[in-house]
Image (cartoon, rainbow, N blue to C red; front, side, top):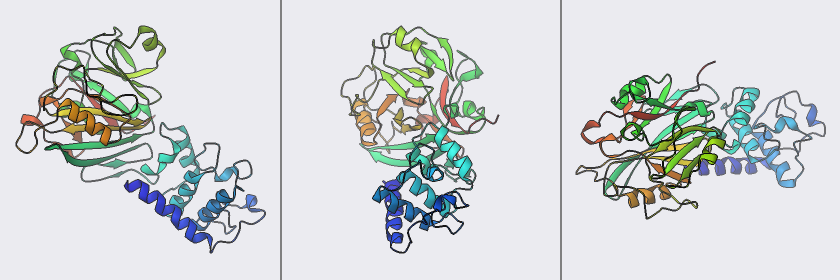
Length: 361
């Protein structure tokens, strides 16, 4: 909601400025500065206002002013107007690197303003923002329970990693913070599906297939290389679909929490549906994810039933959501330390999900 208000405010600013901005010069395409419509040699809020006015009149096309397609999506639209305003405010250091990053990333170009284009920035709470990764933390309370959500945006799928205990497949369990400490550039992490308890399969981690057998008993989540999270109910994922899909990560625990319309399910393939601490992976769209941790088993926070967790995922606006191991395993970590309140300080786990800065080179 906050971001929506910000975008509306930016567009309103443009509208207010149009009354004082002259029409773009007839030969504005010869302007010496990228994005300069007014011919003053700079890209300013006045140029953004002129763009907005031209778009409203239907007189602005990418073919005639390709330099105004800042997001490099093949058209000039409101995202480019917002980019011009951000540049005018000092939020973009270089148009070329900005266009390359936005056009090549997982996220839709309309999400560009969640990132930082003037260097990496961190917060005391563990939040982080660069041109490739953005993480912020939200806290809330529902059904007598506290939850923390890590809101995650990434432009490169290699930023979404998993790690095994003892640094190898079936290597045993370790405290989650130990696994997180070994991730170079790690920003946020959450416990995974505790795969080593059952090793049902498939097990794919960071693009490597460790087990290609497909269980028929449990819901399966596949994170694809294009950033899409696909969730399959039990006995629906086939060998042909799996082999033809570019799977980057897989999890076998579940259950799936939302239906195809993003509405909360009420029936689940799960043995533990009563109130408990919970961990869930949320998905909005390619490049936009969430790590959700719900505290439980305490007087302050009781924990959620599976139905309540599903409803929370719907309320948070996830398009898809997948339950991970919960109970004492449920933990959320940032660069600043443990973010939630794990039951009895948590327990060793066999794997984690993590977000890191894009590897150099």
